[in-house]
Length: 294
Image (tube, rainbow, N blue to C red):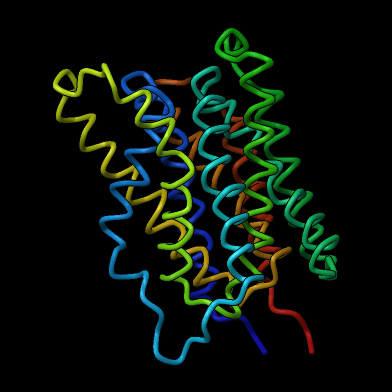
């Protein structure tokens, strides 16, 4: 049975959105303290998704195991990912973040093999190789002076974000068979809001909200809805029909879009070698989505 192309499109669109807000968050962390930014994100999304919390009529009630999965999905893939990513990108560049995030397909494939017992097929393995090789080319062709924008701590935090996002993919695969994509998005966001609220309130005291420009508020609104609502719903919708190892290859769209934001909106330099690297990354997606023979 062939996987619907709408599932592939949902996965690709989700990771492209994540990559865009990873890049654009470089602008937001210059305005908002990290925990306050995360708290505002979860709070705005909680209001937008309030009607998604209710259980559908044909959906089974959550058992204790499902509730724990939702907690870990939020703690690793929402709360910890956001903190590692925001602190990391504040000490790095959007292009460097894209380079490091390209390890996602390989980490997802390994975790899906270890925890879900999924077989890694030859096309998926080739797709992973293309993704990793393409971003290795980006790393090798980083323009002179780019290293000054990064730090060891920032890069290590971004590596931590990669591991958190890979865990999010694997745990999400367990949840999609039992809970609707909309409800997963809403419940995971509520857990994130609960986890970050004490830190967000601490940084909110004394912060000059009146000094934030309208453009930054608009960017915060996009970040909140894209990160907590649209991207999660698209990912869970596609993941329901695609094995986690194959879905992991679509995470290559994250570094591609993050680097594109860095180049097009943040003025980071782009080279011909980087264009070739992104071509390799997209070739990886094509390989991973080839229909399997019966």
